[in-house]
Figure 1 (cartoon, helix red, strand yellow):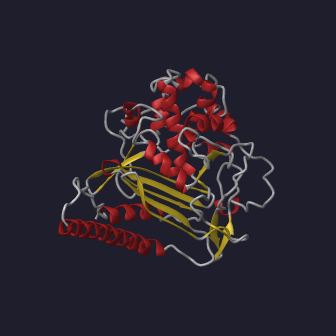
Figure 2 (cartoon, helix red, strand yellow):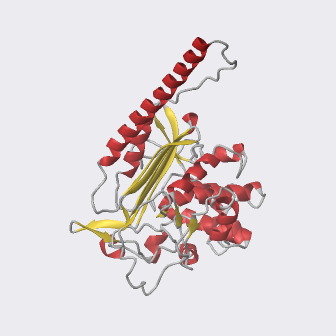
Figure 3 (cartoon, helix red, strand yellow):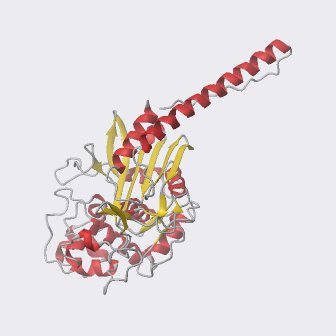
Length: 396
């Protein structure tokens, strides 16, 4: 989309043993516990390695994957090349296009503005974008967040029907004669005389809604979307390798190029004329920075717990029913920038991303404080399944 191993619990012996036998017993207990942890770690790591080996290919793009539990990185693996031509290997600090994982950051920025009393979730689009027709008075911020606004996809308006085999080009290719911007996407949407359906009637995944949210952030703050996210999210969390790329074409210093197989060979497909559109996409980041993001979501560092829970709570349609859809492998709903689903009876919040040779997924089981993050620089549509299988291995 542009679109269990067990942790051993150590017991601290409170008193110093007064005789040698008790000291020896304590030492044996410590060694046994340490051995148990080591065996469990090897078992988890071995099973995850076996899973990921199926996607490891020689002389190919690759992956950065991590599993986090109880605040600790229990497993992390990187393999493949960030740049096949330069033979640059992927590392934990390699920067990937996050694609639609961007939406959760856009939603967080909106929640921050709500807590600053700059907007309310039931404010209408017309309040912030008066250039839209009268129907904008029926679209709320909540509709934009929940994908229930009824908007046409901006790509359809700007580009028309796309042949993606030719649309995505090498990072070294000449720029297109015209490169699209988020402001242009807003303008194109504002010229639409009608909606696809009445706002709130149903869920329809919408990149347009999140582009508009990005523009609303700029209009409310007087800052660029990129700078606002840097000041309010990335810098406070120490996510120094995460950034937004807009029409200024900011440099991404440790970029993994995006690849797709064409005629049996890997080809660089990093570039498209839409790469500068943001709000629904446009953030680049690392596996290490996403660990920091995940951990912040257990705290109130960015917004209050009650506001944050709105992101992880299913939205509703006008008939009062929860949003339901089958975009993922499991039935799911949608909150603010997150799909909400279940795995073996436990609540999951997650999101996928995919664009120009990148595929990404983050899957969180908050009740277990268990998170899986998978970033790839290849057109690997199995990424959501990989994340799910990693989580299932950790849950055993």
